[in-house]
Length: 382
Ligand SMILES: Cc1cc2nc3c(=O)[nH]c(=O)nc-3n(C[C@H](O)[C@H](O)[C@H](O)COP(=O)(O)OP(=O)(O)OC[C@H]3O[C@@H](n4cnc5c(N)ncnc54)[C@H](O)[C@@H]3O)c2cc1C
Image 1 (cartoon, rainbow, N blue to C red):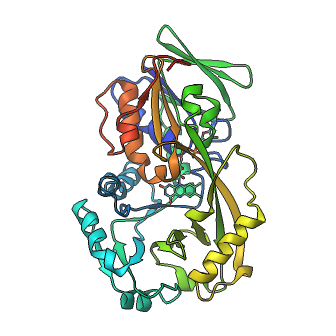
Image 2 (tube, rainbow, N blue to C red; image 1 turned 30 degrees about the vertical axis):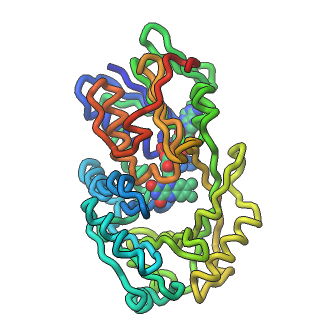
Image 3 (cartoon, rainbow, N blue to C red; image 1 turned 135 degrees about the horizontal axis):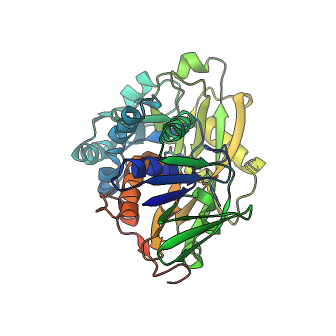
């Protein structure tokens, strides 16, 4: 069986690896519109957080609990280090901490609750409002995402059954007699028995209109923050979430293997947009985050914001998260929406997509939109 994966972000790379490992696959092709990995892929950032807790959502927390071990397992298989088990701290009203801790521990995560006094003494550089407690997940961390993508691509390059095709933008996918044809912007074409599309926020250009019309594009601003003593003061911190006036701001720490500045953002800096344009944040959104973090970090210095960029992702309109779709009698699988948390789930999602691609029984992810993909009868048909 010949499988072609379109898109070399974290989902495409890991799916290609899973296909190589599956029985009965003779050839895996991975195509990307840019280099592999591409600097413009959503996945190609310095850090991505892996944590289980989704407040008030035991099912999603249960689904996310294996992500920590999943990333350590990927490291093991690839023979490279890019996961840093820094932990994740979620701030919340102290009265909620016991219930959230119970959800986490029931899901198998290792975690404990912190009191307001614990927070004040352990994290003096963060301002927590009165009455704020937290849950600290030990089985959580951050992936050095850009390092991970390079390691995954290198692993694939070494496999004789794999071909990487950078700088080939797919413009059309069609299906005929159980063979799938991909047409490229350069006029060329390519056929495969199965095609997996994992084109991230560009997916609307490739999937049938019936799917594309159900996807919303989001744009989120992130600040890079490097105060003078940042390495000394911030190294060894967990990822911190639940911050700020809306309890929706987050801080990604710096980690020992990386000289990346702190990354600061908030759900309130995420907005629906019509198109992907540039990645330069409008002043309004940069200023919004400066306002939020002036409240969160007592010593916040706007002059230490060394960069600000926007990232994009697609989400399914009704459930707001990822979306897997199959069509062309199951010969085409499209990870049509990556959602705002697919990086941590990527090892699980890639395994489930590869299972479907090779005709094996798909291992469950706990994500309804992946375990029960949307099915279209054929390309262009509902
Ligand atoms: C600001 C921000 C913070 C985030 N933080 C987290 C986090 O902490 N934890 C987490 O789990 N998730 C997080 N996410 C979400 C996560 O990063 C994404 O869900 C994930 O990286 C998507 O990966 P992907 O492989 O599906 O897409 P991408 O990484 O975008 O890859 C898509 C690839 O497809 C290629 N491509 C596109 N069109 C074509 C075409 N026509 N032909 C060929 N190739 C094509 C692109 O060049 C690209 O390389 C965050 C997202 C944002 C925006």
